[in-house]
Length: 473
Length: 76
Image 1 (tube, rainbow over the protein chains, first blue to last red):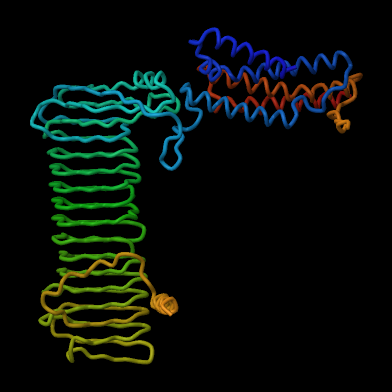
Image 2: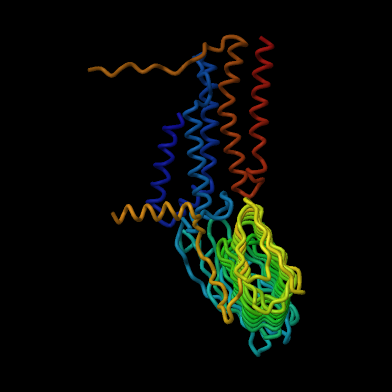
């Protein structure tokens, strides 16, 4: 009985649509489709009671397996329609496939706002999704311009989402809160904003958000950002910077006078001219670079830990490589799977590598060095005038002395040691399985070139050469 | 050429006694669950308790149906 009634109902609905074109049929259907289930269940109940009263045979099950499948399909399409029309978020958040929004198209709305502030206001940006460029100016007001993009199936839904998510500037002259209300948008209508925010130069910034970029420059106060899937660019910041980004796409900071605290992990990091200390915590899988850090640095990740007192030069950490030049120690590098190359360092050095080669070229005067790799080669280039007390040993491999006769080599069939002292600091080199080379550094030797790309093992290299020879033949 | 005969769906004997009442209860449990599902979703869509919180009602209704069937079978 349900099927004929469904047909009659569909006929009535389409007839109403034809007679009243303004009827918001899809909205009604999206909101009231569960009544179809109720109707179905009630009709089937009456059917069964009717059969029972007439002493007719009853079906073994009131609703068959096929009908339950139909119920599931109806629930799926009904809830999808309900979410798409924007009545609720049946789905958690929005539907994205590989970062692409599936439903609807983008509608743009202008955003404008201004509020008078003190010269050093605390500007708070709440629940922000989108891109924000924040620039310090000489004025005494916070001015917001930009546009809001609403992704929706139709213009009506986008207009509704625009009204639901007004941009607000609240607070007083000392603390100004920028509220986008993007989380008020119902259903699948995703609201993002691209805004330019002009703030007094003395302002401090606190931002919370996800999915977007923050571009902040010319701010004398502190900057604190808590966000997800975010890229952050900072330039000419006077105060301390704290970034909690889990994960970050990219962090680039140039000319920071204060400290930088970066948490959460992510992709690339590029820091240049940082005045205060730098603390980095989390797994960063992209290209990590530091240039001219005046304060100490502590990097702690699952694969690599690194600390130094200062970096007047450069540190580059591409995949499977740690390349540094001109460091002030004490320097400590501990890594599982990277080749380590450090040149021009002063003060104490401690390097521990599980699997990777180590190349070192210290500056004068030499300080204590403790260098250990479990599997890999060690190459140490010492200046001619260096003072040291060297002890090098390998558990399986050989030692090459290219420094001179002042070093004494002792070799057995499997391992070797090299010793020599001329009244300087302790230099200890240990490789459990690998070759050690101690050579004299030539003057004006350039810094080590970073090794980009995966390392090719000798055996693989040999087979590659054989393969290319065959190809040539 | 005539089409092959279609087998009718399995039917229970008419409810002439309490065993028939048991079959009636079993037949009614499906529509009752369906109606409950529709009611819960309607309540959710009209600003009431969300389905994510009210879904255990389905379990309760299903359990009550089973209890009624069991009681009917014991009574027989």
